[in-house]
Length: 467
Image (cartoon, rainbow, N blue to C red; front, side, top):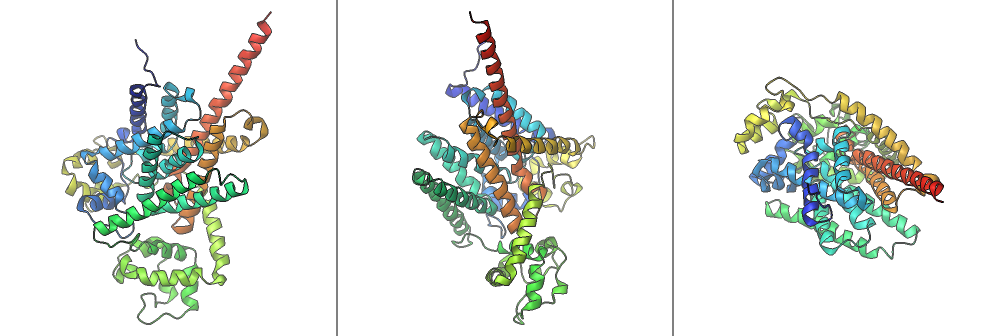
């Protein structure tokens, strides 16, 4: 039997395809791509060609673009993309091939990665952005074709969700300051200019798509309402409205006690102030005025900083797999996923209703108790191992590539927590989409330590047996 050569183009493609199929394991187990409440809006925006008020249109267009193979098309695309970047990010060539597949099997069984690859949501793309950043930033002069491919992937990942752009900006600022301090900025200036070009292309691309679909050449139309919800949850909006007098015609000329209890009601309830005023876009101008007033007034800064710090700490610890996935709502007419699949993919409605997520033919449901027990334990152990890897003893053993991957992964994980907790809300889905990178790095550290231990023992045995 001929062994597949992992270094040949055909061999590499073989392993990448198998890797993609492994990453799709959760969707295969479910019997259909996994959905979230927002999935319906992404399908609707892409298939009907309109820009949602609270999110970019690109992910919806990707659903539409890959619809020639049904809703599985985009699931395969994002899984293959992640498989390609994981292959490109492995710190040692001898980890590729069979070891690569074993690594993906471990991650798919014991972390959240497969549940995000198999989900019709843009969440997996923040981890894709992290690995794309690593390939371009930390690896020494990758081939031009790989640079352009990875840059395109990074651009897509930044355009599918507003939070990804904010996270990328935080990462760029932190790495830039670090390189300035360590006097490496000049030698990496070309890389930063490359990232700047990707960032500008992502912003202009988002604005261009908005213009193409009749929203005007602008980056976002009403997403600042999310931040108003954050200010409500922080208790700052109540304080501001009680301390200032609003114009009688303002939608915010209300008694603070009449505000809804949480941001969820403010953002989505038909009876909320925002919805009664005509929706997010109508409220955008007044929202912007209030946000500028609050951010520009130093008396609110201590409360803002305190809430950001507490929320970020809470977000870092929100890592449960499957948040928002088990729900009997998705199987009923009137839920956004059901309605949009019925309208735009009627041939997929029966497979959708027969999925585990919707209580298939045998009334089996999704249950995340076991995987969450493994996931919590492995994240905890991986975090301890990663902290230990900064000690000189382990630092001298692990490869330079793994050190860089560890640092970039940690930076993205923390930046994700800061942005999500500082601009939206604290939620497991928003952190577990990227926290699986801790487990990835932890496994790679164990692999390198084990290899070092084995080689050391073999060397000692050879030395002792030599004449």
